[in-house]
Length: 156
Picture (cartoon, rainbow, N blue to C red):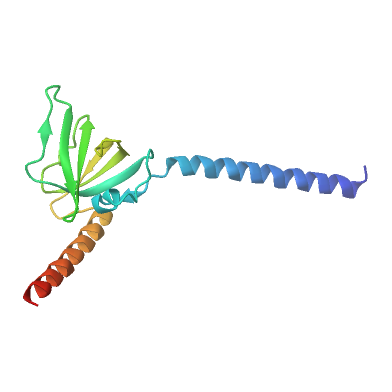
């Protein structure tokens, strides 16, 4: 083999190695991605079935129920437009409370209940996760538009 052919083989193997490493890295990253969805998006079937994703919103007041085992809790998460039931087994964060912002990570079950593996709560009085804040603003704006449309339609 001539020197030029050796260089071409080396460059070809290097490109093949880099391509393989890139494909493996992208596959690993893809399996660790969990997208954020609001309750409205989940109920509109925008969330991927059988895939881990994050669900965020406000914990609906009066919906926190603890099971006999002391670790399993059920509560509702809302974006002021739609509500999704959540089940979580584990210790809730100290700052978790009804009426406050929460982001949960898990899967949606076939029964429509979101089974959370992780629950994240706010860190101070004024904090709401950015995704939750934008979702609540959108839901509020849509609610105002709907109520205005209903009010004008009722007067006609």
